[in-house]
Image (tube, rainbow, N blue to C red; front, side, top):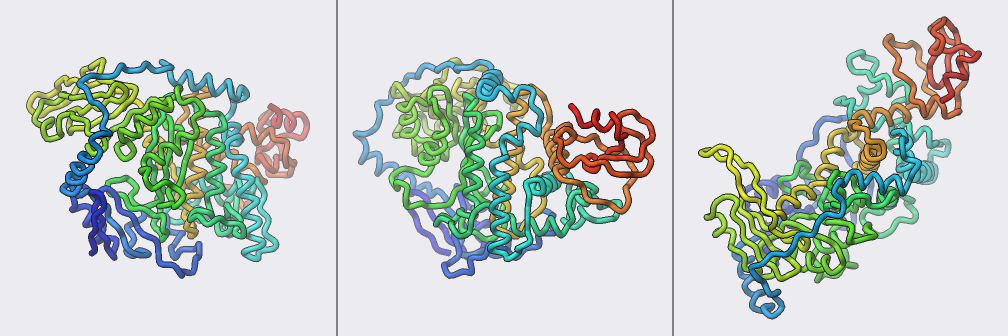
Length: 578
């Protein structure tokens, strides 16, 4: 184990991943664990040695590509650096006073209604639109790109000259992928099983297992002969198109939060991260800006250090300024972030740009603000607070379950409100809460809401390519974004599961269903209106005697695509009209 210290942050290197995880759990103040990349000279293959047929929960990998660096705060070194910097930069410190700034009122009182008005002004045809119409508008460009690059990769790089993938078949593939998110199996092969307790009829009726696995093997998002030098060149074009789609209707909400989001990944890649205390500890880290309701607006994959960036600018500041490029009118938004990003310089800079910004802040980033120390605040009663401001930026330290510090250029301590808290001896008590705390709680957490929505029905099917989790994440984000847009434009309180089921029902009917040797008994599901009225590949064919879907009389004709019985006279025309 090797240790080194850099500006208050100690770095401990380990050869084995479990040793690093145990060290992080036992060390107070551990903040992050980075898995460094493998040494140069590898084979550069995209395919990993894993069993993608096993869909059970992932476990911690036993081996890693190279060393693991554990970053943790060394308190003594941190205090020494703070004192040394404070002497050197004493002239640059702001003039702190025991005063507070006036809280700026919100522009919109009903934030959901204002977001809906902006959406319908930008795209009036979304009023009363169906679930499929919203998703197709968001995902169509990405679908075309995936089909084009997949066909190119299969024919040119994989030497499969007869491979031909259409948009309809790609929708079939993606529909089965989304279906695996809420219809779970322990093995991928179980979806095509003929056993009554394992089978899933939708998979067998839509696509053969061999065809599904062939598409999964060759699916691609970039041209291998024109890749850039960045680590995520294989998947970055798809994320660029995703970000364009997320801004299709503009930034609709006033409250925006910036945070990190983890994509589960247990393979070997130099961009893989291990973060202690997160629901997803292993995976790719993405920076996300989203509304307080969980609607994403930009997703950027973190690729480690980049020589293009200014080394004097902290990572958190660079991430915030990059995410805020989506905003056209700074004065229309209030930005929230946690203590990883917040500093006095960032809050002050955003003030000069016109942004309202609020965030929790670490003790060494307050530019020498003379508020009471954390140890002193712990001795005070619950609900006590202290504050200072320089006229534009205010720092507030509040004692609740723990002592937490806030920094804001738009919200002060007033008005003070009373909130309920529970204590063992006294039961329910009322404690004072500054305005900045209440506003931070209402505006922060949008990225966490998005993460929860992504995790609820994340597709369970695995792939051997290292970029497979990131590709699935794009599809998952597009579904969650479309769901939020649909809720806004229709005021429908549709659950995400219902929304996904409606999309899957249309996707699986994009092409003609596979013929089956025998049909299983049971009630048939209704055909989505988008499929019934698309005027594509609806051919009459003979079938056993069944009831007509329209007139309820016996007939021997059915639609080859809808799989519904109907007479060839008016019934066939009536059923396929709106």
